[in-house]
Length: 436
Image 1: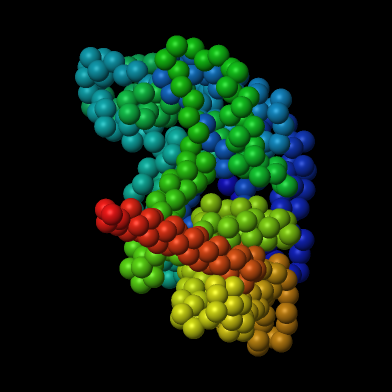
Image 2: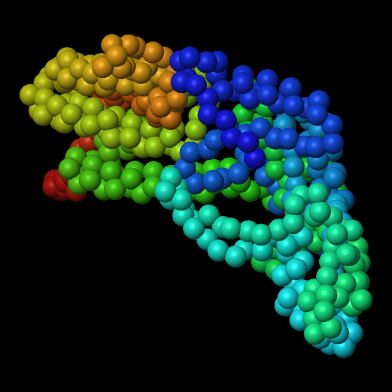
């Protein structure tokens, strides 16, 4: 593993271009596989595309893994594709004849120490230098030129009869290299993972791969599941959806209690639903994708601001309605009175979020303003969702909400007039004309 520290972000090209160039240059080195990855912040999540192949024997799983990798190569857009299958190799096993070793009086533990001296080395002590925080192991082993299989066969160990070659009671046997066995819920698993090429969205490539794998026939007992970032996004989406639903329910309870009107409470909540169109418009204008985590949090934060603007407008309408000549006049006066507060709330919020929306980085000490700093990229989705949604919701609050209030008032008046007409009809039918 080779780790590289880049220069400051404003003194170099984007990291994606550097990684793409490094990947293209090292691809010509024969005999090895090299992967280039950017450092991830937060807990490790692995590559964006991860598939877990479960069930069946090892040969069946390897065959399915080959078919999946072939599909990914045919679709294109996947880079650094790898799987968890063990690499082919040979390991040498030392088969000790304990009966013959006992005849020579050889100690098996001593034999193990001697073998370590020709391989990884024998640890004899540890010490900590003045310039280091961790302890350093002191290992004793043969020089690199003598750490060979021939040297291992010529190795001698001390016994009661003197130095005896280990070939008298040890046999070297080649065997296939044993890899790591991965299991999930007791079933054998092979994981196929890949990165996505620059300029492509992992969600789009995962959906494309899911559609392609739907036509691939899998052997009996073998299943393929998507994990990694796709699994994390599904969990985050479920959590944010539940949180958003609970927030809407609590808002509905409070609004119905205060307004004493289910219609007006639903009118306020409908503004939250309509404001999501502004979220997608803002992301479309800025050319950014919708992130499940930051975009979802932005929608939840946006709902509080949108609800506040609609509450003050509806409350003003309810106060002016008894003194106005009709519902239209009350709506016009309410809109005129709340125009400046609503616009001030929107303008100040959008202007405050504008630096984050534009990925602006202000260096007060160095008196420098730069765009595209890595520290601002994390908040761009959140600020864009709130800014775009609030700008669109302001138009709904000042135009659509008064119209819906007038419509609700007319419907209530028409319903009340029908009830009065039915009451008068029933009173007339109860009158009796006296007989002449």
